[in-house]
Image 1 (cartoon, rainbow over the protein chains, first blue to last red):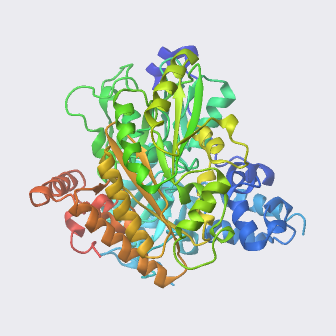
Image 2: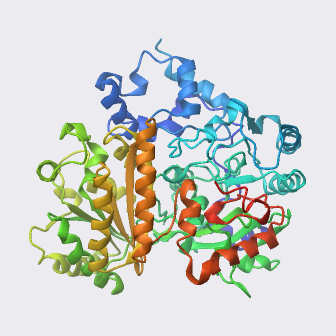
Image 3: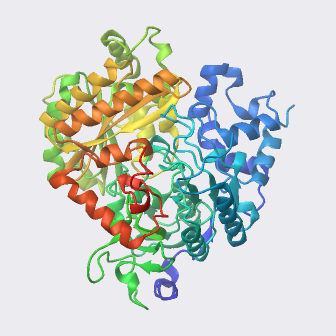
Amino acid sequence: MNHQVLRSGLVSALVALAIPATGAEMTGKEVFEHYCSACHGAADGPGTMQLARTRGKEQALLVERNNLTTDYIEFVVRHGLRSMPPFVPSDLTDARLQALAAFLAKSR
Amino acid sequence: MAEPLPPGLDNERMAGALDRFRRIVGQEWVFAGERAASYYDPYTIANDPNAHKAHAAVAPASTEQVQELVKVANEHLVPLWTVSRGKNFAYGGAAPVLTGSVVLDLSRMNRIIEVNEQFGYALVEPGVSYFDLYKYIQDRGLKLWLDVPDPGWGSVMGNALDHGVGYTPYGDHFGMQCGMEVVLASGEVVRTGMGAMPGNNTWQLFKYGFGPYVDGMFSQSNFGVVTKMGIWLMREPPGFRPYLITFPREEDIEPVVEMVRSLRLNNVLQNAATIRSLVLDAALFSTKSQYYSGAGPIPDSVARQIMADQEIGMWNFCGALYGPPAITDVLWAATRDAFASIPGVRFYFPEDRKRRPDILIHRSDTMRGIPKLTEFGFLNWNGGGGHVGFSPVSPITGKDAIKQYRMVSGRVREAGFDYMGLMAVGFRELHHVTVIVYDQANPREREKLDQLFRLMVREAAAEGYGEYRTHIHYMDTIANTYSWNNHALLRMHQTIKDALDPNGILSPGKSGIWPKRLREAGKR
């Protein structure tokens, strides 16, 4: 790889950046934004729309829910639920999942 | 329930292999028992609970660890099912073809090694998602665009290796691949193309190197584990103008596709545009129950109501123009004129669309390489959650398009599903992708889907249409349709497989390619 780095110099943006580093700590909010928000972050996200369909609009946005437990969140993330597929522990690590679960269950 | 074992292995031997794996990658990166549950196909089709069920998963962090793992797998005869990120959910997710395999999960190998703005390429590892690469480019203000498929969380490498498609002029992802690093079953590392020459400086610039061009051998295959891949990226164009053209009748697909061929071959149509069906587009932002409470597919009267309500057509042609206005104005005039004679046609730019959310506003993002997950809204149409793609390829002719549409939509509706299809325009071919959304929790519906899928494969093959990609459950079925000269191609694949991977440890059954050791035992 070194020859490429030397050749491309300034125009080559960066070498060997891991995104995200799986060992890095993230807050629960950061985990939510990184892994969940594309489906659950906005009113027209597919996850939000499914929850609106199955549980009603008041239960549709995860960050506004007040009935989520950490155990439930951890189970759903690892096993999936209906349309939602599971997230593997190599990517969404146990530490991140715990932070996420604590963040989403915060209002209980 | 105990995790299933692959043919020929007992618990003791598998446990020994997993211990060795732990020593290579670390205790926390081998997932067995309940910890392997995330690797099951979430939208299973088979009614056998053990079908395509992994025994465990192992997640290496480097090429060197992959080398060590395949050496141990050879010693213990453990089949490794390789996934980049395992997000290919319409085709089985992270689950293996062969029950009892250990998933070789490359998610942790997520380094963006280089993004080169001068030449327009990236060199990435398998765990890099479209979201990751997009963010990297945006954070640095690079004037480069991605080409993305609909699932933005997927692997840039994995999608290209599975012949995935996107929607910009760089829509043929494997066509944009340039240079690979591959770990062979022996543990040896190979670099392809110019990467084979020490000190060479065109690994991501020239595909072919010297001698046979072998990169294709590592796509949709089980001949090696790709650990790095170059992908060409589009320069940010000086102008971008997305559009939507709607057509009101089912039979319009015939003249539309005739026009599309002419536009594509003349380079007036610049991108991998799509012609999308009514329900596919309607399902992104609305549900079936909003319009229809009856059983089975929606009737024509409901289809008309949806069209009026959402300002979409029975067919919706989403395309985009790329370049300076002086060029895009001319291309738009030619595009508009080509379709203007079709009765009921309507032309839209984003500023014409007032409804929110809206299909053109959403597709405009996708056609400029912004990764999203919005497309998964179609899973909410009837709430079943399960989905599978049926994806035959045809020439770009009106006759083929309407024939395919009638064959597939007829069977899909006969089985009680709505037709959700799109025709993606390649350089010379149409990918006719139909997603069937089903209730994966209902064994009878899974059985119905399975029968429907196999019937459609048979009928398509009888008319000369082959699938370009498929779910793990149908890899043998599809491979068997590529049977010219007594399955000569499959037999050649098997010969290569046995030479490169004599113990048959890499992804047995991928694309119907079984190693000698499992050629009978592996097939269900």
